Image (cartoon, rainbow, N blue to C red; front, side, top):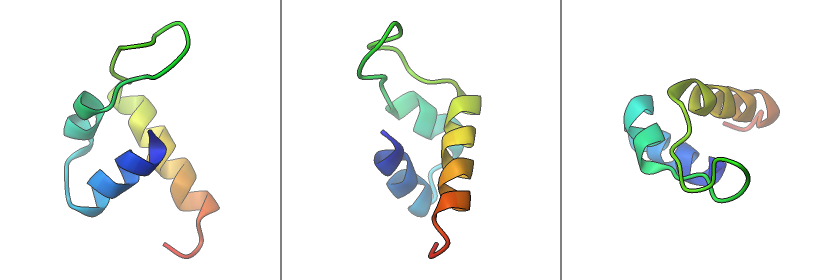
Length: 53
C-alpha cells in the first residue's frame, strides 16, 4: 500500500485522492479506505526513512 501511495504522490495526485484509491488489505478494517491522516503519516514516515528521496 505504501509503495502505491508513494508512486501516486510522485505523479502529483493529491493525498485525499490517494486515500480514496487505496484499500486496506488485512485486519479489522479489511476492504475499507485508509483515512487521509493515515496516508499523510505513511508518506511522512517514508520521507524520514528514505534519505535518497
